[in-house]
Length: 484
Image 1 (cartoon, helix red, strand yellow):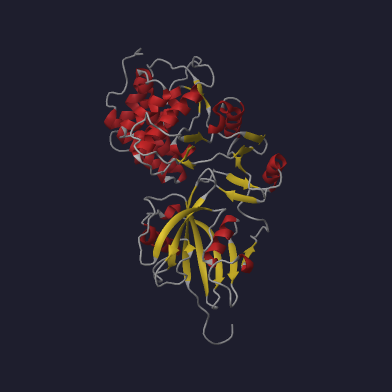
Image 2 (cartoon, rainbow, N blue to C red; image 1 turned 180 degrees about the vertical axis):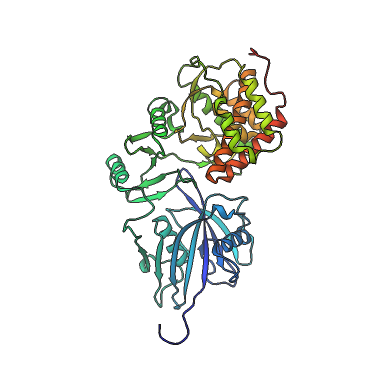
């Protein structure tokens, strides 16, 4: 370097707060307002480091809370893309863009003096009137680029102008594009549906999740999924080929499957996951009624049959899971679970039906509707669309298997449980109620064990919360042997 002052430039952080919908992933944008740079334009929540004491992740967590009120665990922050930017005036900066798919709270405008609106937008349908730098960062993120250069020229507008697109994607060390599956999966998907022009990674924020939204020039879209093991692939394909078609438009359609790649191509289904949705009480009851109807459709998709010998609760795994989860259990949890296991051995068997296996709000999509004026009860309900996805844990079992994880959603809300039962068309028997308690407790311990081994605090927290609830609600959980 020649003598003279060493070049220095600002560092900023940008938040891709992402949620999944049936139409594709959405990200949160805020509109700048007041006496600030780029007032009136949309951008991601962002900011600068406060000083050398603050790292880029800490800065992102702080800026997110200050601007949107959401609380982010640093463990949920994922590196997305780094953009080297030069403004039309010639000033340079480096922006670190981070993806977050899990947070606490509902985003809202927290600094009205510099931001006058927030909105969720589809990642593949970004709005007009965006800061060009922000637009470039989101396009690089959507393409799976790790490092990008966005050097604007003198005279360029601050707002995004497609006629002056300065984004340059740098290939990674392999020379391959990121953000999409390997070439074998791409070829498999294109044999099934034709040329794919855009891939968007829609995987959950867990290492084993591998799902992409694939679309073509005409805007048609599908989902491509690679299962983490052969068993999950076999289960999902079996369900999609046998009983899932009885659900009609409430579930995806299998377009193609490849057992060697453990990959499937699925039709797109509309809706947003119910996990984390904030809905009016009436709409929640209507949705839970529809969930009950959907559960009954699943369980009635094939005639019930007697359970195989020895096919009771998964008590054979209880010791292993309790040992792994012990340090995270509250006092009394282990004794409660062991008592349930002991008493469950005498429960009468339940008939087997087809089950989803992971029937929870994360895998249930809804289409929002406007309620007509004066609607006040379940009797006057508009159309509510609920759809179900993800059948990789599907297998025959007792019907209550599908209520284990769903029951966490109606905890403390008897109205939602009653709405579900109204849609389901019958109440649970005494043995089903007892089996639900046993299976929910065992599932909680299993979740805590898995979460501890794989660094998943959400699973740990859910398991602990469920055990606390079960101990409070079901101190005498099981009926006498032989009860109906």
